[in-house]
Image 1: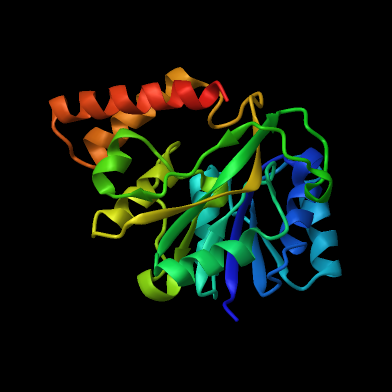
Image 2: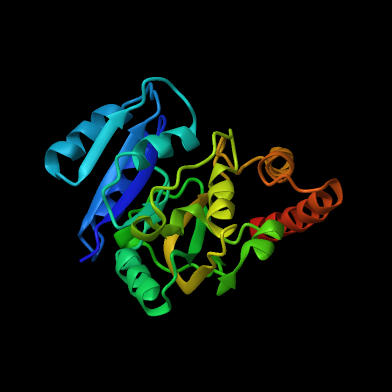
Length: 257
């Protein structure tokens, strides 16, 4: 059975952290390790992590030496990974119980090394547990296939659903960027010819519209997308403008769900 390393960055997430962790520990695929980096939290997050670690040996928290942002926190967790696969979940989102089992089966059936799934959206004040969630019709649909060129014009992969084969690709870290580091990781994996495959079944729950969330300010995302295209992907000015227009429109459409 494949071991999955689940990566979770945490910063002042005490209000939602418990439900997120329980959604991972409640997976029907139980062969997992939950690698959590506490990114200099000043609330009760670290105490909660210690308690979960005492209760379940699969919970492996570690405190970052200093606050470095979500990308660095994820990298610190990935550096500890032992699994055949690496998956991602933030400390305010949820996985539904069959997520890993279905996604691993999908990867085996397709031979895909980078997979993702559809997911539900809920309002930022949602307080329920994964086991209590009922489908609400607000679904961000996964694209069946996406290559590098398609991904330049839209990030088709929700980070909370992404999973890549560490066994085949090695440990692939995120670039040191303030935002969009997950998008940059997918592009770096796909640049070598890896195709992303999407499972249409919604298997995760994303809290949208959270004050201060990394995706709440769409104008700032335009700025970070531009930096990604120009500095990380080294695209021409014209090509960057074309990609930015497509990505911005896709972001607006997704926000309406």
